[in-house]
Structures are given as C-alpha cells and as structure tokens.
Image (cartoon, rainbow, N blue to C red):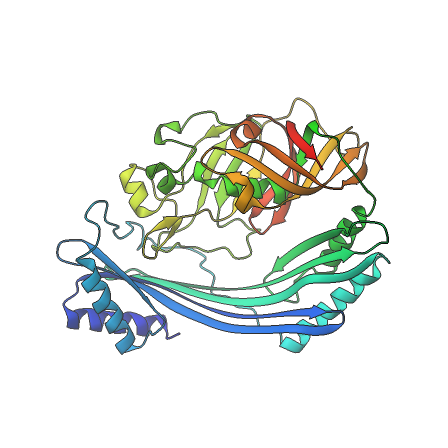
Length: 446
C-alpha cells in the first residue's frame, strides 16, 4: 500500500479535480503468514497480503456515497472518489453519517512498532515440535487435527478533507492447538488452547502445549450427567462467548434499530448482580492487538458498560452518539453502512462477595470450559440460549468430564444470578475475564 501521505495527496488532488469538497478514507493492509502440520509433516502454508480502502463522499445536498477499492494509486483513488460521488445522490437522506467530531483530536502513544516476521521454516519447525510434544503427553492422544501458527502485520489509516490523518501499525503472532484421543471402547475426546503475542519469540508455546494436553487428558474418564439444575462456573472464554453473543445489550445501533435487549432509557438500570462490572477497553494492557482509533478516526478508550450491576453506557459510532445525545466511544466500522461492535472486554468485580467460592471445595458444580454452536443456539433478541458445551462435574476439586450435555437459560437472568466473580483473570482473544459463578442453570444430559 502506498504511503499515507501519498494517499492523502492523491485524494486531495483528485477531489479538487472532481469538485468534491467533503470526503474521508479508511484503509488497511494485512500481511499474514500461517502454517499447519499433520502427523510430523507440513500440511499447509498460507501467505497473503490484503489491502483496501473505503472511500466516502458527501455531495452539496449532504447525502453520502460509499465505495471500496484495492487500487490506491492516483487513477484508482480518482475513480473511487468519482464513483462514491455519483452514489451519494442515491444516499439516505435521514441520519446521514458525518465526520466524527473527534477525528482530529490528538492521540498519545499510537503504536507504530512492528515485529520482525519469522521465516516460514521456523514457523513449521516450531509447530511440528509442538505437535510432537502434545502427542507425547499421553498414549491416548493420537492426533492434533486442528493446529495453526500464524503471524500478521497490520497497518491502518484514516484521513478526511477536514485535515484528519491517523496511522498505526502492529504485529501479532498466534498459536492454536486442538488434540484428539482414541481409546478402544470409548468416545474420542478433545481439548484445545490458544496463545497470542507480538512476536514468535514472545509466544508462550510451552503453555499452549501444556494446556492442550491437560484439557484433553482431563476428558478421558467421562461420565453422563443427570439432567437438572446445577450451580455453574463459566470459564473466562465461555462467559465472554456468551457476553459476545448478547452484545446487542450495549450496542447503540442495535438499540436504534430495535434489535437489542436494551432500550435507550435503560441506562442507570440494574441489569446484573452488584458483583459484576464490565468495561470495553480497547487499550487494555493485555490487548495485544490494541487499536487506538476506529473506522471513523475516533480515538478508542475505556468505556464502562456495567458498573456494580448497573448499565452505565452503550457503545457508539459518531452517528449513534449524535442521535442519542451521547459521547463518542470509538466503536465504529465503516463500510456500505456504519456498524458498531465491541473491542475488548474487561470483566471484574469491585464488590466483596458474601462468600468466597472455590472449585477445590465446591460440591456437584458444573464447570463449563467452552460453549459450542453459538450461531445456532442463541436467540439474541429473546435473551435465551441452549448450547452444547465441554466441561466437567466438580466435587471437592475432583473433575470428571461430562460426556455430552447442553446448558440453557436466559442471559439477563444469568447476569442477576451471579454469586461470585473470582479475582484471578484470564486472557482470551475476546478480553480479560475471571471465572464466573452462576447460582443455578438447567443442564440437560444426553
């Protein structure tokens, strides 16, 4: 992709030539390499370089047109601006998107650091060694059918005709391992783990291998679970999966479209137990891929969503913030339509619990490690869910794998039934969260 200053100059020259006075451009380029292995041999090597820009143009009537292109030289940008200008006459006349009022606000500590990408041969060697060590962890582990080691460099920018110009860069390296067992007379069992860092050198490969093996081995001796009501403990990943599935609760665009569990007047309403606090914090120190501005150039920041059980904020684009008379939050994605989505959750508690709970002393508790089939088992507008899961029945620290079961409930009731939020948080791809204890949920055994 061309230099940001070159793109800005191309855009200004082309806009002036076409008589366009108001426009903005958001663009990114992603350079990614990933490898997979299978039984001691390289299985797949993928490498890609994807780049593109989204161009928005406003006409004299202040209606807007949008187009996207991967061609960012002078001719490409001129054609994109011309096409967007022509499309602007067919743009919506109500609630037309506009520039973010914060697109020119200075941002401190913007990342421009990129790690050196490791050669493909080193990625393959590292993943082959991880596969070999996982297979050696237990005789029953016969394969690691799903695995990957990938590295990515991301550059993105935003500029507009009012003088806004932002850029940032960062690097990510991630590993995923998912092993499977085969034992005569028993069902195959599996377990997986994920790790992410800025570079291969910093990646916790040993931790990923150990967690994968331990989870898989813990599922070898499994039993059926009786259908009934159980006290349930969600792992960090499981709880954040559920929170993400019902993120319309905080999404201002969903609320304005009447596609949310919340209404605009629900701010200040108690929607959860006082033990629960949730923030959306794109700049959290644990967020390896932290982004300092959104698709409209608005700076990202920490936003309190639930504070001691009370709904405190929604996440906004510039348009939703204007319509709801709220402050910008930095959650916009631009395209044919401006959408709003969460960045990075931080779940915690500041209120002391009535009792300290522990899996080491709990009896007949279901510990849910991973929820499955969220695309099919969640009714996001009704608040209900019924989901298969991987997990254990726990008695005084002894974990017995559950053969097959589903958990069902109402998400808003889950929030009000939380009885304990553990102190130690875990890092997941979607955020930072401790284990969450829920008083009672329906578990259906096979």
